Each structure stands twice: as C-alpha cells, then as structure tokens.
Image (cartoon, rainbow, N blue to C red; front, side):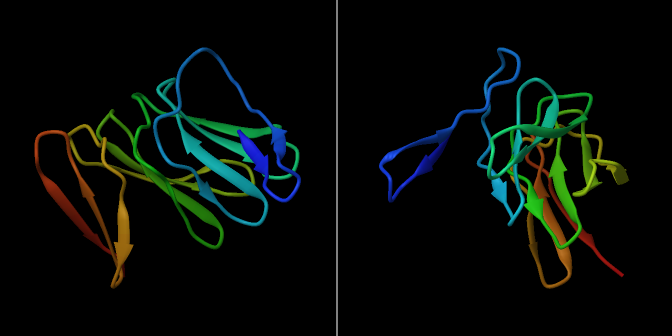
Length: 127
C-alpha cells in the first residue's frame, strides 16, 4: 500500500496472488521492490502501483532487497543470493550459499553480508 501523506489518502494498493509480503520494500525513483512468500521478488511502479516485473526463485523471499544503480540484490529461502537488472528483472548473477537466506542482506565496505537460517553469516567481497 502506498500512501499520499499530504493528501491523507491511499495512493495505490498492489496485490498479487494470495501470498503475504514479509520483507520491507526497497525503493528508488521508479520502482518499489519487495519480496514475497510466493517465491518472487516483485517490482512495482512507484507512481501507479502496477506490477512491472517479477523474478522467480526456488524459495520464499522474506529478506529486504538492496537497490543499487542498475540492479537489485536479494536472498531466497532456496539458499541463493540473487542480483537482477532493475530495468527488466533479468538475472545478472546468482550465488549458491547452501543455506536458506531469510535475513536481509547488508552492503558496506565493498562486501555483502547476509545471515542464513542455520546461523551462518556469509560475507561476500566484491572485486
């Protein structure tokens, strides 16, 4: 649900399937990106509330995504960390970590840190 705060009303509501959204959304100037228990990351037009694209994974997407200039990063309960192109949801890469990723990833000092369901903390450094 998007709210028009100055107007004091609901701007739009997005619903897809009957599965709940558990992650906090990531937002840029064009999109709202949010994970769902339907095993997809959803990209929603920030202005209209219309779906733009969905990225299917093999498990629930419960952690919050991270938005970069041209991509979005997120984990899935299928044990993979994914990066997708913001423009169209095309997969950029995936990294098999072998443990359900239910925590939200974090980025800092040129590395990604994410926690797994079994208590493992993964740190992935960029080049």
